Amino acid sequence: MFSAVSIAGEPNSNECYQLFSSADYPDARTQCQELAELGDAKAAFLLATMYYQALGTEEEDQRGLFWDKIAAEKGHPESAYRLGLAYQLGQGVSQSNSQARHWYQQAALAQHARAQKLLASMFETGAAGEKDQARAYQLYLKAARQGLVSAQLKVGTMLLEGRGVTANRASAQHWIRKAADAGNANAQVAMGVILAEIDPADSLNWYRRSAEQGNALALQNLALVYYAGQGVEADHMKAAELAQQAIDAGNSEASSLLNLIRLETEQQKVVELQAEKQLLLRQIRQSIPDNGSGEQQLLLATFSVDSGLTQTSQVQEAEPATAEPEASDAKLSDVADTLSETARSEDVSSQDSVSQASELPSEKPYVLADGWVMGQPATHFTIQLLYGTDEAGILTYIDKYKLPSDVRYYRTMRGADLYYVLIYGNYSTIAAAQEAVADIPASVRDGLWIRKFRRLQAFYVMPES
Image 1 (spheres, rainbow, N blue to C red):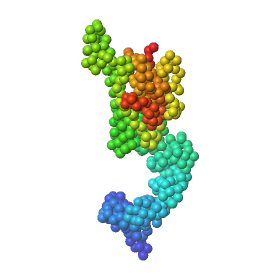
Image 2: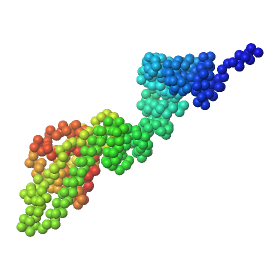
Image 3: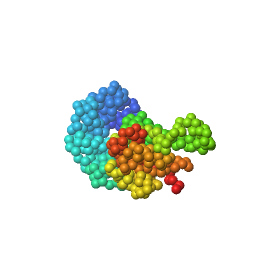
């Protein structure tokens, strides 16, 4: 009889859980507190949750921490995890990595995936009191196998880099793809980088999926893809839009890329306008008969064509004396490296000159073979000195201004017309090209133009004969 009364008087654990599940928090708090005081771990956990989230009571973090500790000491993994997080962040308690490690370990032993990941991070960074990459990897792997997406990305990254485990690209791709398929934007960027050289189309797809989530790095990488024409048709306007979106999303490094795109776009406009001007003047010249009266020269003068121009001055088309900025930031360079340039070639040192790359006919010691420019590394730089339609004028210009003996020029087409481009040097970096400007006589430096071979190749048309 006594036993029956005693049992009847004990709080009902199911009632505590049911009241909490049905959101009857005031009654749940009463029932759960009675159970928690008797050592019920789940009731203590639920009571802590109600205090943290102000469910049926005012928000009281200290009471929440108190009951979480009771629950954690009784072996409740979620309470142990929350207690570890509180100590790591110093929320409601004095910050203590050692206490955080202790409680994360308790939760991790109970297979709590998020605790395993945070404990792994502490071993990876040394916040646990020691750096242990192998232990970090094993903990990340346990969490990843439970489906924790952020841990899957971590496992893939460590496998890719060979940190704490033997590098294995195939396994790395497996785990990163799992995280990417689950919608992790950073994993989707990583897949884009991994596949950039192997499968540009699939790489582009992953960048797009990540960019749709507003990932700033994906937007930058996508801008680079359209800028370089990697797996897609080059589109500088779209590249600029994406670079601006990356900046707006907080990626300040994309500003270097945006500046480069804008500069190259302006340079392209200059070249196109010059070609249009040359074509227009030629059409005008051909449409006006030269009857010896001077009428032709007078009319052409209205288009800023001086009747006294020599062949040399005809080739001196004004071009911007500006240099393309180099995307020198380490991360931007790293990303550009993974995209790979469309015309890879072995490195040419900054001391190599154009003359070392071509055999020249003796009767024309400065001319390069047709098609030579297409064989140069697209990412290298050269110094463009002149651009025009008169070969004799090019030679006169070289002699008149005492240009270095290893300047060279090549032929290209604009419409039906043959043009000549005078260049100096082949440099692997823009800094090397800028240093080489000192080799050019000061009297002609204002007209030079440091250019990427990629841009020269984009405008190159093989002469017909």
